[in-house]
Length: 321
Ligand code: 13P
Ligand code: SF4
Image (cartoon, rainbow, N blue to C red; front, side, top):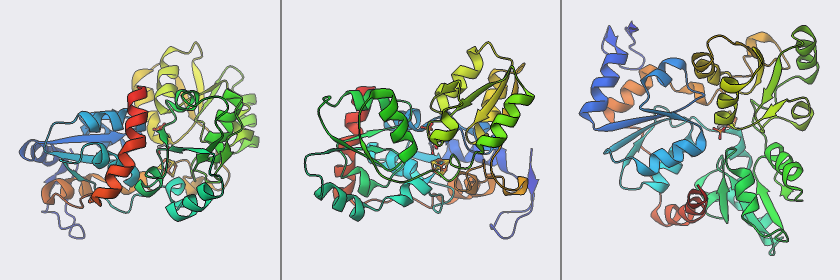
């Protein structure tokens, strides 16, 4: 039961944050949605915990007055797009994403204009402006299904993740043109150190998220979205697993597979950089969550025309299941 005095964030002294967050959730008729990359104490308070797809689906179905979104900006924006009558608030409006930042809508509009015969599939890690230019959205959970929903002879532009795109090209045999964005967390893993670790733990499986670079993915025994990795850890025969994704997921993995040894995949650079933690996701804290429920801000506010345009490709994805 963390209590603290924090004048910087304007908290009353010795606030029992967890109890207050639970109380305010009731009072505000709010639902707390959280991504698996959140701090463990936020995960433990969430009404619904999921990957990007499950969170978009949960946001669409939410019937409370307020959606409190503990993830990053594009996720909360997606919640507002699919459920516009709700008040959507976030603990920190600055929680962004390197993939979303890599692809400004104006640059995508130019790329599209240069390839008029191409359809656009946008990974959900992008801004509403980019979604509005896409034919369909995908997440790492449903990306293969989304690609397969386009005719085989349909040329496709895939934005913004070049690593997920390259993995999809390999899996589906397509030749999608790829935007050159990357995730700052998933591009950080060290091939050399992973091979050293495999030598040290010869019976361990190496599992990885498709946002990782091809040089890493080629060593993986299993590749999947956050939820797929979680399910795999539960069912895998291996008792030791090297996990190539953001470390926030280890909290639920260890809970679901308490007897297994989970080893965070090593990254390039100094231990102190904690490069396998998403700095954007970790901007959300219990203190900011409390304040956001108390003050109902910062709120996600969107231009209605943009929201409607971004909803079309999101609905197409959601209809695919
Ligand atoms: P998923 O939740 O779809 O696996 O995506 C991972 C991620 O990096 C979210 O930003
Ligand atoms: Fe974006 Fe990567 Fe952070 Fe996910 S983990 S929010 S893809 S920077």
